[in-house]
Structure formats: C-alpha cells, structure tokens
Image (cartoon, rainbow, N blue to C red; front, side, top):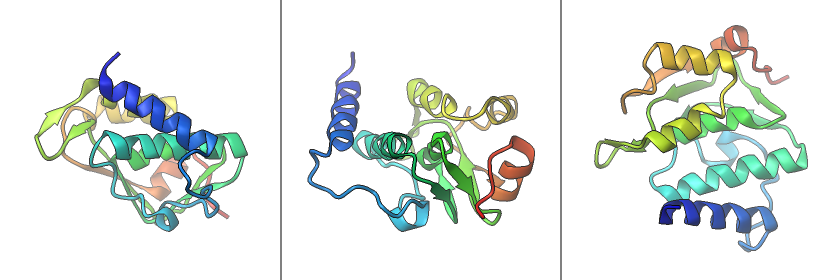
Length: 151
C-alpha cells in the first residue's frame, strides 16, 4: 500500500469517527462547504471522501449546487444527493494540475463514484483521459443520467 493511500484511509477514519475536532458537516451543499473547486492534494482528496462517508452514514440530503469540479463530482455518490439544474459539473482525469501528471488510481476512484450511464459517457467521450475540464450542466446530469433534482 502506498503512503498516500495510508494517509487517505487514516484521514477518512478520523474524519468519520469525529477525531478531527471539527463539527459534523451540518449544511449539506457544495457551496456551503466551499468544496466546489476540487482537491489540490491527497489530504484535500481525503476530505472529499470523508464528506461522502459522513453523509452516507447520516442519511442527510446533500446538494450539488453552483460550480463543482474534479473531486467534487464524487459527491454524486452520496446516497441522498440532489443536483440543482443550474449547477455545472466539470470532469477530468485524476492527478496533479500543478505537475501535469495523471494518476490512474485517482481517476478510477472518481469513475467508481458515478452511476453506470454517466461513467460510460465520460469514458467514451474521453473526459477522464486528460486533465482538461469537460463540463456537464446540472440539468443534463438530472435529465440524461438520472440523478435527482433538488426540490
């Protein structure tokens, strides 16, 4: 196991168990958490995984609203997620924008959080082959890929 994988697991465990000293994420939306611009490093990536785990465990609703790029798109795997039609989701390969290096493991981890139809679409259209951003509107995510709209 790589060191970064150990770090991610430890951070997810501590965040899930409440050992981080931070309050639970009470207001469930991308904009309220300020997490719409993805993860700059593995520690931030782990924060996204912790939010997903926390909302799936609590059963609380989580809104994808506004701008949601990169690791933020993994929030689509939250059990009670909803999407605002005016949201914009941006997809790309996992990796480092700073170094330009694609990480196949991170890319696969992001892909595994999408419904089959969306996963197929972003794969067939090569959205996950490069670090370039490819946008899909919230409205299209709802209508074309079957994610629920926020009411």
